[in-house]
Length: 338
Image (cartoon, rainbow, N blue to C red):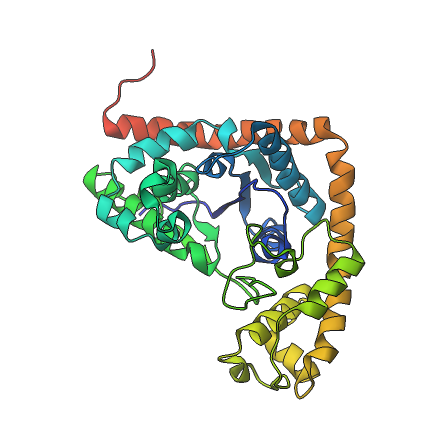
């Protein structure tokens, strides 16, 4: 049994308009992980083009995600930060692994059904095979741990299935590790402020549904004030949040921003109404997000610096992925390149 080094891989799509869900669900956790694992954090621009993109905006948004990583506290000397498209192993390995994956496996992926909607015949092939590319992202580095939200857990399970099939079919026992999901802490999936049953998203038509990195303190206060809630007082224990999605969402956001637990938040606000929680939540969000937003704006004013970090990160990422891809090609029976 191979002893694979402990390595984290994760990425964020450069789709613009970063929001609180991106920060709490992913970026803030990356900052902690970099001190515990060898960490590779990607801007997944290949995933972004599964739907049409404006090329100029895609470049800007890729830099914006990199700036967010840096502003939140990811150290480019300690961690690898790069754009997915800059390392060819992602696309090459995706094709090889796509030949291992099975149609039936992809047909079970619920996210494609959700994103394609009723007119799935007009969806891109890339949107359908998105989970295979995600598997390639992870396995190109033999990542052992992947921080994911609940909505991506099914895709990670597919990555494990593909890795297992490759290892077994190619007689390469334990060549790829089976990556483990890391789902940690409160607010692993931040929900809409207008509907506690729907994920916070930039595509929601209501701007009041999300807190973005460009919101000022007045906008944040307004959005939390208008956030959907219910008439009941907050419970004193977490069990009391069952069947109350909006209450669960707001309490979870408060816990994540304050670095505490849901139980600790409820011990403070239990028995009180949302009028007590919402102003404190707004203050906390401003306190946490404002410095990051300010630093992002500063960094975006020096695109050469961001591009330099992404270039160096891509070189470091390629130095890990290229030998792994070379071994995969050898296992598959491909002739070496001269």
